[in-house]
Amino acid sequence: MSIRYTERPAEVGASASVGSVADSYDNATAEALNGTFKAELTEHQGPWRDFDVVERAVFQQVAWYNSERLHSALGYVPPNEYEQAYWAQLEEAPQTA
Image (cartoon, rainbow, N blue to C red; front, side, top):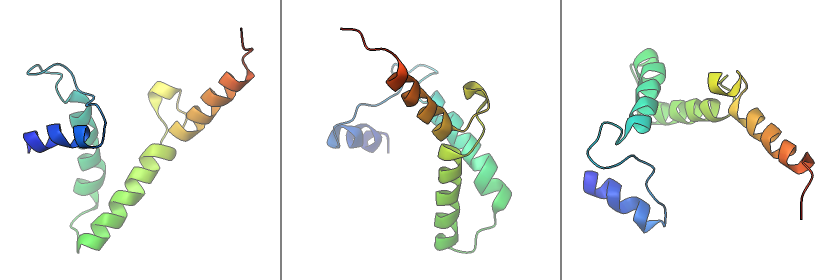
């Protein structure tokens, strides 16, 4: 699997966003997100009836996580709202030549 994880970003023209090779930070961000996902969704809402139920639950969790959750690092503002405010602030800032 690790070979596939390495090859796939290159296939789509993306760069991997991980730390240096063979240190404790290799996949720290991804592992933290996966751990949160497992704890909040798969462990608390199972057992699962079938794949369709899991697929819908994953979609709902990802939609909530990306758009509605209150994020402490963003001043307890949902990510979408924070991003909209960020871009609005950039548009309002005077442009220098």
